[in-house]
Image (cartoon, rainbow, N blue to C red; front, top):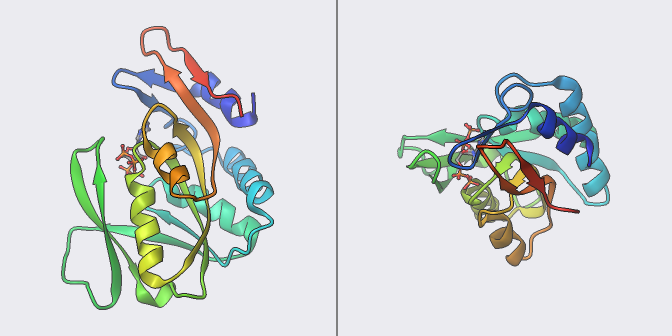
Length: 193
Ligand code: G4P
């Protein structure tokens, strides 16, 4: 078991509906020492890539992506969720559907901060259906930027996102992959990696 799997077992809570609560250490209250270790682990995994920018999506990805960006010594750029449609022109726009929240968001980044010279490491806290990652990949494509890799903290391996993104040929690394969880017993089964 790696450091993250250990922490999930210790402090993660399995809720009905295949939801894992990690808000005591990852996406509400944040354990800074853990984020530091996560940053270093992504640097270890993607250190041979040419990364000019770390990209994520608001809100929960931001804290994690900052620690990763610090390891690489590059800026962190986060896609903003926006309801406004009056932004085309200055912004790259992609549509992201959330299955969990049953809504659609436009996500945007300023054209000032993404260009064909950029080589991106995309980071997020959770991968479920992959909509957030697809949205960020689409923003990168619009800008002509290169996606060097994608780093996820917790992948829900029983949902389709991981398979879809890997089948598209992207280098996707997840620090913990959950193959099953049971809200009644609280058991979590991690995929051997
Ligand atoms: P997807 O991006 O992989 O397709 O995920 P999906 O639409 O299914 O999930 C929507 C939101 O719920 C995402 O956050 C995702 O990170 C989060 N999520 C999915 N499964 C879980 C889970 O088991 N536990 C927790 N804690 N979160 C989960 P978001 O709403 O886009 O962003 P944020 O503002 O919360 O960062």
